[in-house]
Length: 248
Ligand code: NAD
Image (cartoon, rainbow, N blue to C red; front, top):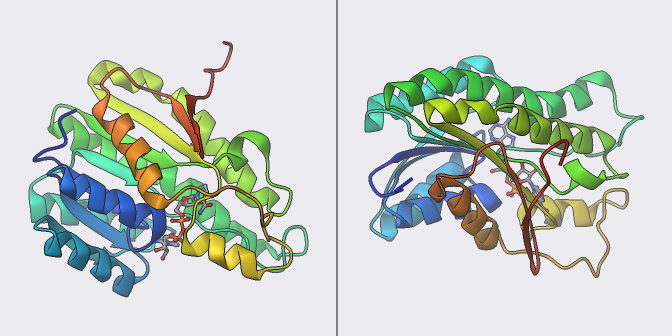
């Protein structure tokens, strides 16, 4: 897909990977809707894009609320005339206390943000993409979804589910809707800084980290390459490879 002139919506666009992707897609000529539960963060991303001469708009969105996802997509249609690219990127960890000490409400929110919002965002975006004759959806999964993450089993479970959801949606390429996901290793973002503060979630000190812009580059690869559908792109320092499809 030629990104220039397209409309992109990015959840969790107010920080980290989402911000870097929003900035990168705008640089490539997309008009960008920055959706985030943190309105200030979303506003800062829009300011970065506008300062660089790009076009963007912010909307406060809690992806755990179905009505907010609907409003976010309507905003893209009303503001920029449609939708071509959806980046389901917002994500959270379980935090303290971890599973199994966390109560149901605490870990249910991780399911709602990291998984249900991805399933629902995709479901609600499909009619908009069809109206444009096709488009792209990219989910942010994680390496944790492939190899597990003992400090946060709920997080790992949501990210694994996103990968198999992605593989299972490959046939939508027949109607020109390509759905892929990105699986980063450790990325230098506020999420990782918070994990470093937690004795329980702390990643190893010597874990090599990616910068958010490197993940954004992987997202752009998934959007730009029309041959990719249902794929999970693994990205880490010195690593960029596709997970094998089930059965391969
Ligand atoms: P981050 O905390 O810097 O950014 C996440 C953004 O999502 C924040 O702006 C936050 O306000 C927003 N957000 C959280 N809950 C939301 C909700 N309910 N509705 C809307 N927005 C919400 O973290 P990040 O590292 O940039 O993470 C982005 C994605 O990348 C997540 O899905 C995360 O799981 C994934 N990921 C991160 C790493 C890493 O090491 N940082 C590695 C692999 C995958």
